[in-house]
Length: 131
Picture 1 (cartoon, helix red, strand yellow):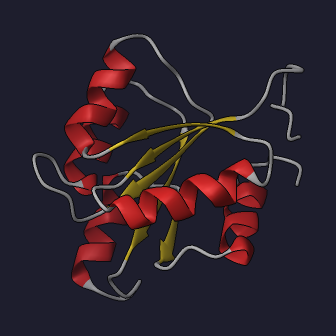
Picture 2 (cartoon, helix red, strand yellow):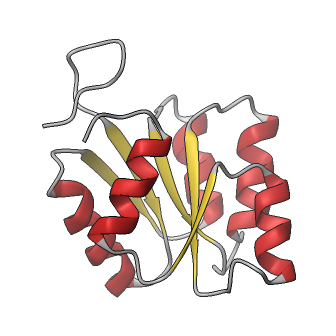
């Protein structure tokens, strides 16, 4: 089980993705590391969860979603003062204009889908979580 940097509590993660398949994949990958997970289907739901007072160590944010996309959600979360590590996960190439806009919105890491165990470990290392 992974521990947060300053407590003996489990690491928490929010998966933000409109694809049920990706939700399941990301949930399973995080679960394999003993991470406590909550899943939502779009950026507005991610904002709403934070407005309800929940906080997460890590947010896996899809770029392309209905209602509110990952770029807009990331900008909003950062404007709200949310300091969680946000990893953008998208099917867009990291060299695309959309990916650059996502990075400029405030994500801490960018990974192309599909998310793999190796990519998740890379994200976790960047978050300074001990894998």
